[in-house]
Image (cartoon, rainbow, N blue to C red; front, top):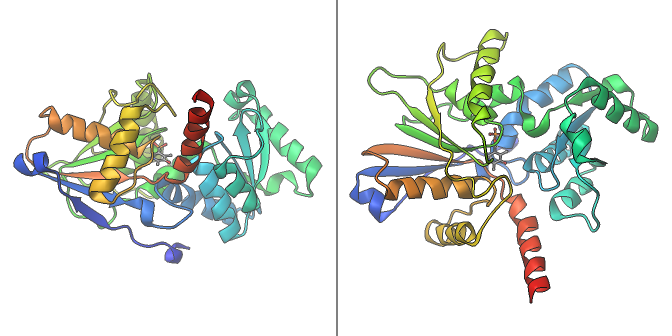
Length: 325
Ligand SMILES: *Cc1c(COP(=O)(O)O)cnc(C)c1O
């Protein structure tokens, strides 16, 4: 299953201030592993797809917002690995479809829409039964052939896959990554071997506003994983912290400063960043660097992908410019 994926390169990036401070910056390019199922989304899907196969499910049902990287990746994975896919999309349908949903539909994903209130209840049994019934009315699927993947692949299968992100990688003092559900951070914390005197520190940058609840979620995720029957690599998670200052107003919110930063970073380092996740984290790391936050160290920034979303956002920004002028 993994053979169609490139192993992701680690690139050193040069920043005059970092060089001056003896700080080495590296980027793990998960955005390059596959054109469509890329970034952390492949790792979060992998064991969900395997479980779906093993339990003889022929279709996958999952959830996401209208620009969701997870919806995009699941639609592509379904086509490539032979599952029917159903995407439950938060909000009203809008036509023409945005580039994310158009792609998903082209891969064969069936799109269902649901209002925000129902969407909030998406993890309850009742609502899931309702989605399955809707589905059954419009196709010949029987209910037990449908495997449900939570939004963003945020379950223990997702954590398990993310434990493979840092497999066989060299040692870094600090690992930085953007966080939504923090499934990826949990997987990294559960796969980073601590060394005496040389512990790795993991720094998560939540892209949501008011994300303090994530700390409890991560603790719970870690506990649930270690209590599960799933394979483990460490007995204790690596130490992690969350940095709350770089959400730019909340999920999906972007401003001119962030856009400019992403463009400039792309020009200087030839690495494109997405505005929703990696752009905010990279911005945060460079800003902390300027504030003197880091001592001499080797820092890895994980590029978790998400570039497909920029297309839809740029389209929306262009429309707004047209309306304003
Ligand atoms: C989904 C996503 C994340 C968030 O991952 P979590 O495991 O939910 O924290 C980060 N970066 C990108 C590009 C994503 O698409």
